[in-house]
Length: 377
Image 1 (cartoon, one colour):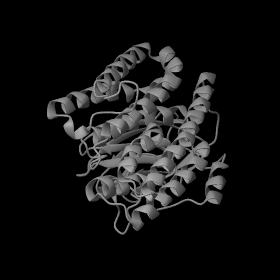
Image 2 (cartoon, helix red, strand yellow):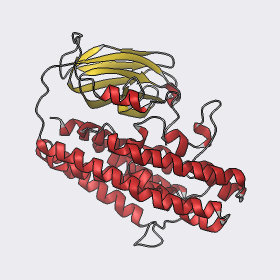
Image 3 (cartoon, rainbow, N blue to C red):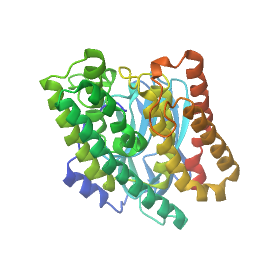
Image 4 (spheres, rainbow, N blue to C red):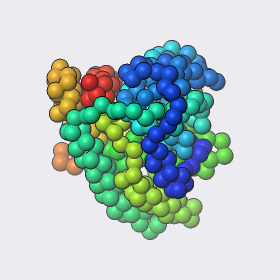
């Protein structure tokens, strides 16, 4: 789940942007040099306005009083790469792969709204030839993301049918399973900018004037309000419509080896900031199902990139294997059915157990943050 964006892209504009292949501006940063990004509550300063095509590194420092999000985006808001939840006074290094064209570096204090932006021109020129295994990893991950979207729709339709039938218990039972594919590939959905706010925003993530729609609005109706009325049935239909939009666009997502690696880390951040805290599914307490989906999605991206990471940084791969195994084993303890996605209600998980889960997530997130750099060495 991410905060809503204010701009929405048309299909024609998206198509036009993806065809940009060259730019005549002279680069003011050399290939491999980091762009210094200084984020604050109302400013976003960058040390370079242009870079050569290839891999770019943002060296980010948040000097503001709010957690911020820094992204490389197309002008229409499609995300090339991002880092959420950069706390006040903290630093982060983000590695991305960019083709020649026009972009923006966006700082979003409070992780809401359009943010403060600086233009970034990526100039043409020779791009280092990459390991062909990375091209295969991207193709395989794109197919995985499409499969997850295709498998999600029937589950969502089953959930929506129960809502429209007014069957409260059946709708509750179908809620968590309908979200698994989304949670596995959430960074791909978020890259479009306009879909996630419609389907996965929580009440505290709404922008001023935004109508609350999607899974969590229906979750509140089912568990807290204990009712299904005409509005909920209308919202259920809209959920299907919005997710069909996601399904149709997944295959067109901007995916690179670095976006896969950064996306894996973002999924762990989703766990740390929403699932472990119990904020994500605060009415149904089905957070552990989403938790497992996020971990599975992160692990899929990692496994596809692993052959190249193994060649470049064997020690990192050893550590990631160890930490994925440990976190999965810990999650398995909370399954009520060891062969399915039935988990203990998260409100039954005590403070000490939540701390253990949080520690395991952090132990994995730290080496996972190094995966993007490892695949572009």
